Length: 127
Image 1: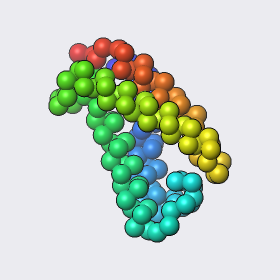
Image 2: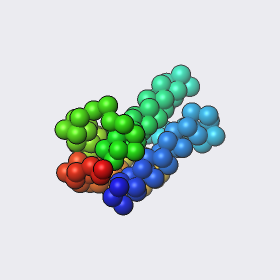
Image 3: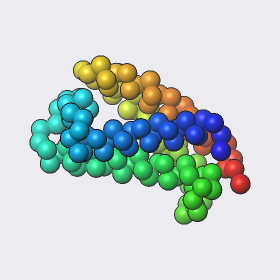
């Protein structure tokens, strides 16, 4: 596994911990989603979706590196990584426009993830 993919997994794991902490209301929810969550039900939906998305991306990276048995073809894995790269580019733009400093700082991480996912999609999986 390339070092950049290990860093991706560490960052994604950190995001999983953050989303779980918000779901459990350990971390205040006003630091994410632009501070505009209207209800606790909406918080659960958005944070649950975010957590599931991060876990899915971790699984795809693990499949690419044969840590877990792939259920997608190599071509599909590369395309999934590119889709996530686009998602993180859009997320970076959103973070830059956000009102909270925490979200603005996250723009650095999301841009890094986008770049590394593009690079990862170009590299062959390790056997």
